[in-house]
Length: 396
Image (cartoon, rainbow, N blue to C red; front, top):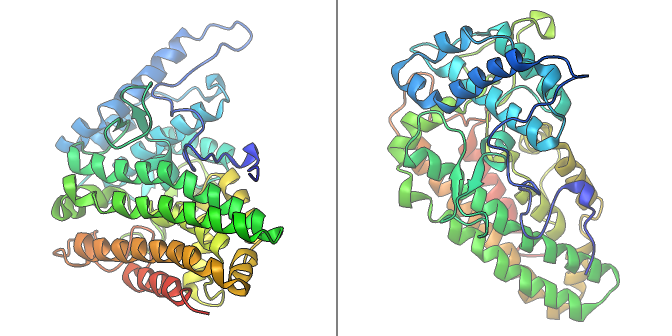
């Protein structure tokens, strides 16, 4: 079997989920023995506000509570990746609750939140905005740590309003991320076998990948079990939008004390920031037109992904077309390969259907478009094109 370097922070067992379960409480350390109990008390206030955020959002108190928070002691934050991601999750949820948690959207994020958020984002090489990484990849905990990451054994750590619909929306994504690990791993093995012109093992790995990929579609189909389209559109979606190509923020948002106080535009949380489909496209050689705006958007989404995942995608794309070309030359490989592509096509078709039901067919509300996605794009044409590109890859 081919070895995927640990530096890409990817595993067969967890996919693009973190190697260690996400932190549920921040860890701190003393600097040179200096007293820091007072600072820890201020951190407790931050984490308490984050924990109780659904209560503040419900009654419209989030902005006032966040404004009154004490300065966050960044110097005491331990530099473990899981700890940094926890802080990023906390600041991102508080930031979006501040911006969207009122009758009107806010155009300025106060310094007390903007500065630590900006600092943490720089450490992670990501924009200071709620991304898929903070919303899903690092936003779950196992109920029984002796059992695997499955829908019946995980819970959301942080949310906006609370409730089963919001939590289920996140957890379905988490389960898909976990299950994608094995499919991507065996396709990586198939690629390695194809490089060695090993028909037998290429077939074996493609056949195994087809089985694993079919599971992703089955998980996605469970979204309606506990996530109602009306609830999602009206109570979940408003908080995960961004401030780029969003009519409510023509110039973006000011982060007080950061970026020279010049308004910034960042895209909101979206599944396009997941690395699963770009990885599968790269491994299977599913092409997209690099000259259209859709491809440019997908490329921009890399800026919102964890840096190691970006590097993994870059590595996979350096091998683009190798597996597909080997399959084309060997008819005995056509069936398992096309079954893999069909699984991705069905997944994308299902996703498009959900986008129509959960967003496009809802009654439009102010500050909640039914035509522009949370990532700031006309999502229906984009998702349709992605589906069509996958369908076209079923022939050669």
